[in-house]
Amino acid sequence: MPSGNIIFVIWFAICTGVFKRYSDKSIIRGIKDQDDKILNWLYDHYLQPVKIYVTRNSGTADDASDVFQDSIIVLYRQICEEKLALTTDLKGYFFSIARNIWNNSLRKRKITLELHPEMPDESPTDEAADIVFERIVSRAYEKLSTDHQKVLTMFSEGLSYEAIAVKLKLKNETYARRKKYLAKEALL
Image (tube, rainbow, N blue to C red; front, side):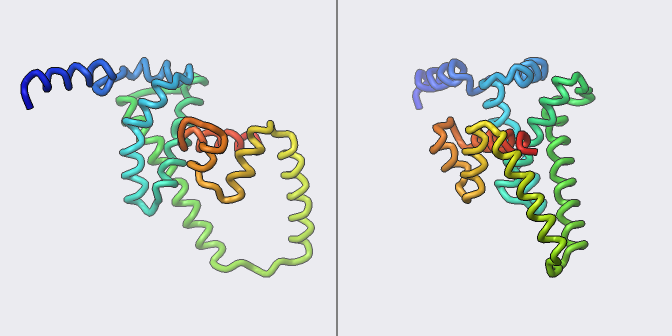
């Protein structure tokens, strides 16, 4: 490659932000302000280590994406509530949040498997409790915004995050995951 082309490639990479690095302060400010550039940068630079950790520890790529999304929300809450106490760089701190979320998820799965190796037969009292529970969930669902209802309905119908993103005309499946998480939180 002639030296003129190399200079052009480097110039292009710098101008388009390929080598862009944000300071921890600007990332924190961007998360607090929900800045799309910062959030996209986080996905580009922080998701891969989380994905590697989760998939190497009995998880799937979908699990990793959920853990990543939950980690962003935990970090966002800590920032907004001014409970963020960095003792390391932000990437290390974020990864420790993700690791804790995944490890807690694994512990819950293990406890569930140990406590409920087989499903017991349903008794009449279980059926009555299920009916009451369905009514409660149904009422809560009706109070949700139409966007949240659409997302939850599509998810319960088994649509992938990619399909949900296409149907709702979202930028990508990451936004669909976020919408689903927010809708689930609103329902709870």
